[in-house]
Image (cartoon, rainbow, N blue to C red; front, side, top):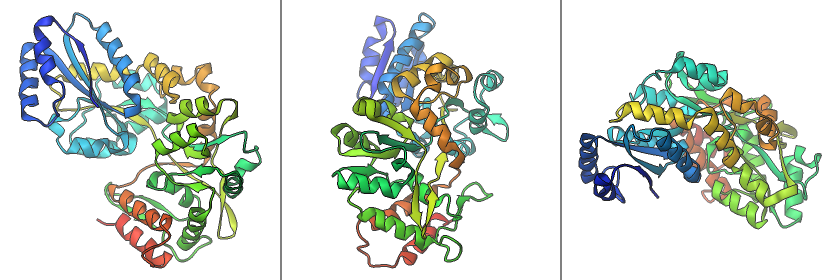
Length: 415
């Protein structure tokens, strides 16, 4: 659903109205957008997560108020997954969003494609943001995007009414408790981002080759203290456990609200929803360990950052830069934390008492010891999803676990 925010004189009303409901790739929209540019109207499209629509709407309102009288704005918000932003943008870069939120692992691709140009006020952004976030927004020391959050990782949410501090150390124990209570412990196996948790601390590796495009992967290794089949066997046991549930992010939130899910692996973007649902029972901690190859393996995690980019093809690049800077400034990062529970990259916002007291942020920091930057080529995702889908379905293909692992790794490492 698109949401438009208007600040313009009445003579432009019919023009703005004609834009409503039209797709970005429609030729009539392009023609009308060009007419708007000729008339002096600043027409900008913003992409962000669907759940951020209200938040970004408030930011856009504030931006238009700040610059009232300096331009006639038609600013449109369009929901777009941050994790798939690059795919959507590459489909029609010149007509893509002017300002967009994306995960930092997509930065190299966006820079290489020409979608991003160096940020002009780089020194000010370096001074005001955490060094790790600045590094995540940079390529070879050049800043190409505006740091937005420093919390794009995951950890364990749990309901204290079901689990003790001792219980949450063991994934196996949590599954047993949930199963006995007719409840579920959640983990999203449709995404390799989360599945990495089970492979990350086993000695089995995955990552980006020096070409910056292809992957290496040893998840199918047949030697070592933990073999690929050891992880696959552990996953097979989990999938069969009555206390386990794999669903998507929306399913997790729904389960938390209706009481079917009492623990799960997710990130700070769901902190507000989980706290509202569980109240005094709300708890957060680092990921637990799970049984693999007869030993306890601490779950790993990917760490990352959310960034705001400005399309180098924007017809109103100067205003798009101002909007990106506005969305990521200290005040709006504090607002983002207040409304969405997301950890700021801005130094002052991150140092606030409210942020420091957040259970979700504390859990993320605790998990950071076992987290690793996500630097993965595009071929990683689909093979992992296909692998986990087979396990969740009970192995309908009848192939051995080694065969399934080999097929997954072949897909991950494909040129």
